[in-house]
Image 1 (cartoon, rainbow, N blue to C red):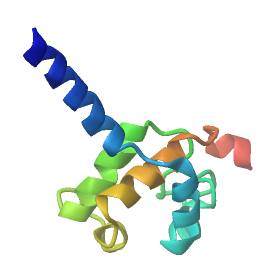
Image 2 (tube, rainbow, N blue to C red):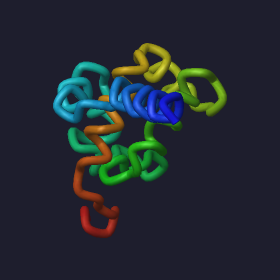
Image 3 (cartoon, rainbow, N blue to C red):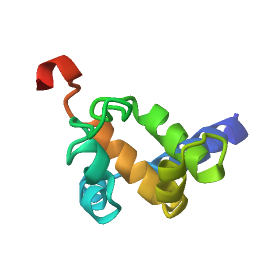
Length: 109
């Protein structure tokens, strides 16, 4: 039983060690260039083929950025952008965008 409690505690710590910080993510949006295509809060993509990031699920954003970084997901611009990100920066950006109010293109026009 003690081993089980230790394993649960270790698992909880591993999740919290990789949790993103939305405030740090907000700073990264400008520094890493996300704002150019997705808008400061991820709510205003520059083109119709660029996704709205505001309000997306955190784990989806982490997975998408990680997949661009590794090459599993293909897009020349995003591969280059995500390739420069650390694991923590990916977590922080995901925390920022997922914490924003979800919008639709209809609401923007």
